[in-house]
Length: 236
Length: 325
Image 1 (cartoon, rainbow over the protein chains, first blue to last red):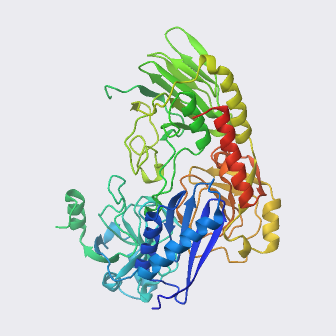
Image 2 (tube, rainbow over the protein chains, first blue to last red; image 1 turned 180 degrees about the horizontal axis):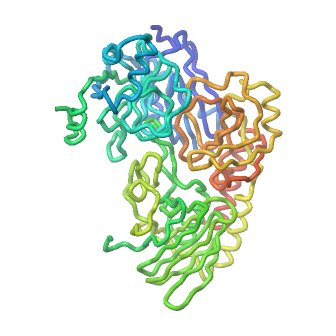
Image 3 (cartoon, rainbow over the protein chains, first blue to last red; image 1 turned 30 degrees about the horizontal axis):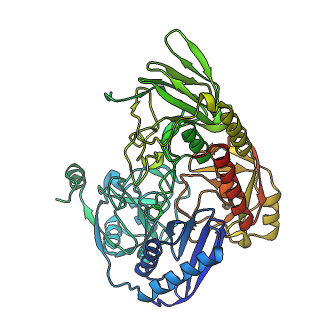
């Protein structure tokens, strides 16, 4: 995978938002480096900057709406990012195991998805749990981690009719993505399992269990282990 | 019931939450800034009762509520227009909006439904107390954290007051000032021609779609909450196919999905999203987004970024002149 950034596209997309697009040969830049660039901007003490949102290959920087000088802010951001990118690497990452139950009530769609791919449910779970996922970013709602790395054999078009309520902890797949619903929300992804781990807790710091760059593996557990984990807060 | 509780919820209204000015700087965890949907009204309410701008107050939605106080307190009502009265032992009086007033121990504040706009703020001297979560006392109802137990208030809830005091309250002699600030705030919140800058993906739409957008009058649908405001009156989907790789999203963004019916993002907006952004409401008009009411008709008027900053700075100057912080 090429990690060369061809150009940094900096555009003011409102009077208070500067968007940074990392334009590269590869559509998937190493997320560890993107995250380090985002952190460098957050830590640089740029005047008037209040938040930095990382997504696939972009950052959205929010400034105080009174920030007067676009050119000066753009130049500062470009300088910080260029330096941060040059010294960044994708070598260190955190491995996170997420226990999940892929059976019964915890996996309402596992049979339908398996049937769609013409495989038994056990092979679907085996293939899913063999995959090493990468957290690209945390967004949409509090604690929702976008995971890349879904095996192509499991790519599935999203549900035609979204569910009104998806239970918190549901492990979902849609298209070539996977994710864990941190909160009970409406959702259009296929639900193939559920984790007892708490994905988001505002009393923790950081509040989200997963962070950009994390390597995630799902570990299958039985329903009784799921309940035991919920009681004790740990994998037994 | 807490020993030091000061505000007792007799009638919570339809959807009443504790809100301050929100939590900037947590979007990398998927957490939007949140806070008062109409931050201007909360700030004015706080200034009227002598609080710092960021003290927490109560945000009522469309339906009125009733609150009983168990100690003397200075209170102000701002935001969407309500009829309000204070009921005590044998006496009852009408209280104004946009002005501080005193309540005695045992008295109740009772408000009618919100008649214009959507959200009314109850600000109390010292602010409403709630645990700090990610740097704010604001309720994020969808994620069930912040504010009072992470949820909208219920009958029987009891709230304490905080330490958000900053200066003297403004009532009595300062009544004339209140009239001034009320006119200023009402003018801001009555805007239904929202000033906006061209959005991040405006150029990806067909020119005819862009033209249709800036010329269109939209109606605010019933599908409206702190997350966003759905608008009806379609303008045709964009040439970009209506879906892009997710990017960071912002309060005030006007997304146009495949249906061609825009979604105007509110304070509790998704932090990232894949619908193309046609426009972004300028900072000066963001308080209005929190006051849009189902069936309101709105238009978007394009301004450039330099103009947007001038309009914001001028509005802040006017606010500080009417009612200094």
